[in-house]
Length: 192
Image (cartoon, rainbow, N blue to C red):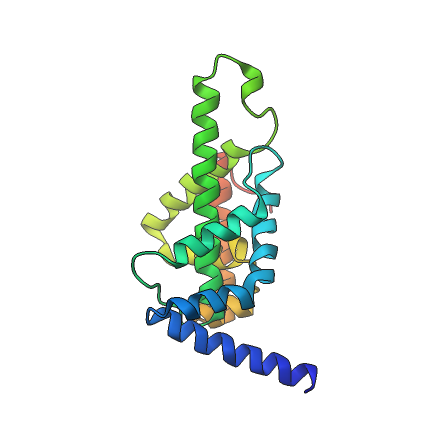
């Protein structure tokens, strides 16, 4: 079997597992995680890098949290692998936001400055999350583009396929979201 044949077989297997998992098959869900584990770890590392080095859960803990969410009360529906990774990325984002909130409360309530992280960017994570929530009120499509591109690490073309949009529409939404977020977070227009 050639490398190309193996990749085609794995892709077909992932699609079948996504379908079975979406239908509620917990064994398929477990096999899906096994097949995509290395890619989930790369995504989790990317999220941890954005977090900084203080207080972030470990990569394995983040991937475990994705698995717990996949095993939730009702099956999630994924149209394809990129949709699955967007879901996983949102779970990771939510985990890090929850951790940032906990650290923020700890910092606010602690009388001992050494008990809270001195480094890291949990305030920035909370600010970005709040800004995305505000953007979602007026432009939910752009937020989904950000979830695919920034959190999911997908290319413009992969995002276009996942969202059933043209690459030009994805690029416009991506550029508009980035400009909007910059203004919202910094209170000034981005430099041209």
